[in-house]
Length: 310
Image (cartoon, rainbow, N blue to C red; front, side, top):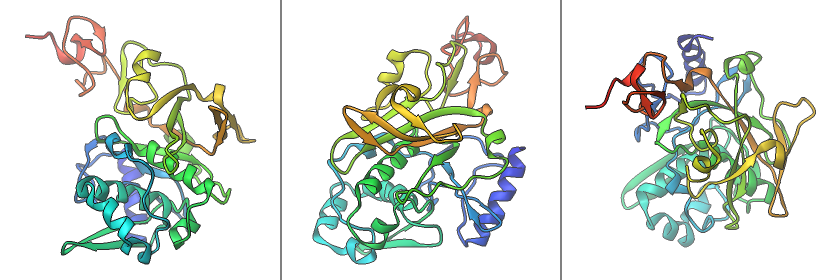
């Protein structure tokens, strides 16, 4: 599907839910994280069905915290001393993190507002993966795991916003609905994400396809890289766990993963897919920010796209 077609479909859906996503430019390619955009995720609608298309862009240092210091996402849960202390630890970072937490946990059409120091912070729901936690009760184990996976899936090494397809189930075991055309529009398998940030167990990523070749690079560098060593060091505190096939079990349709076992613990994961154009190739005529000048034909020495250095 053309980028402009996808944009039009999503704009109509966003207007229908009274949520406006701020696009940069006419296409749907990577763009810098915009702090004015209230929602990090894009959950489009086909008729009345929500699906898991989402923009990622969460800085990974936002995942480096020792559990979540609040027991629910109801409005009154955001007025406790514990939440205030957690928010005050780094307001800019926690504001950004709350955008993604609420987008992952709370259904579309709902929002959460927190007033602090004379400033109103409003975060919009989107995927609705943790309905009980969103209603104000303590997060169940399934909700802890699925929100942790969702935050990890939204992380981006470069702070870029790239459209991805998120597949899996919510904490109640209900599949995230998908568009009929989604598999064809997001043909590149990417990763499985799992873990538990609530308990300090950490978050993990596995690659769902082979390694990139030496001519390829991507803004989604946490799962896909040219070597195992590069993947291990790509996105701390996200830990690379090898291949999804080695750690996880697929659903009956063989499309996404239903569980992942790691360090003796079984996690509920999320699976991601990418558009083909978000895997860059030296020689495609565009010097991408992941590519470098040089004399070769590899992504880190791409004379064809970036010219010679100096």
